[in-house]
Image (cartoon, rainbow, N blue to C red; front, top):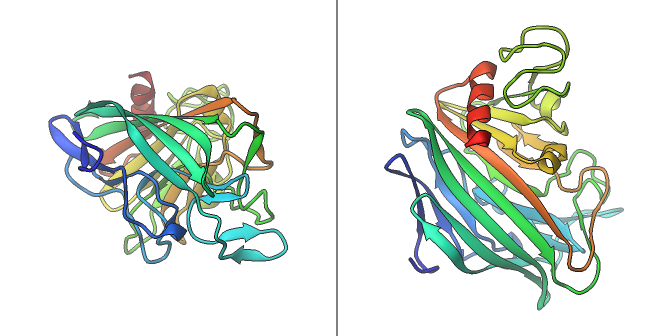
Length: 306
């Protein structure tokens, strides 16, 4: 399979995602590989690309708004004291090749370049795993190495002065529907991915403490083990699968548009020394139907363990 053809991801004998390695996009959309469409096992699409409200949103993948001042997210750049402005500062994630490409996953090498300079080298792995007859998991890990020869730092609109806009890292744009999706999370009391919290609360959110969190405001900016989003006939559950990933707060939007991502730079910029590598892993449960908290917790436990 060549990089110029669609890379299809299969699970349980079905195509569940298409991976575009070399998109034909304008520079202000920060060209990068992305997954779209991603579907449930029943065939419902759960990603959206180039939507009218944010044409630089590209399905599911990795996007960062500020790498040493370069925009790898797309769209306008938030500048302290000026707001969101159009700048000629967009970078490109270049697909360098597959080290492995199987029907249920792949290992990819990429270069993050801007202004003719290679800033970061990425090693990305993507795998699809069946969980039940109605759910599967997309496992995405990205390792970024600073190859610029100098220290870099990763920021976000939040670290540049826009409160609440700490997006950058893993990001999933869901389809916009007639009504906004519902969102809920695992809470912040130390409960694990299996729903068994330190306060004795159960997987259904019963018991004392703050195990359950419902609504966009409750889960946005929270470093919870997982967050879930449910739409018309589908549920997505996003789980940090490593200790460091679980420390990254979630970026969640539901009312304005449906999207969930991680925050590499939430309260402060993330420094990356020359030659340093950092790794993040997010496992996303893709399920048909609307899951409750107990169902989401059970599938997350199975997905992360698989």
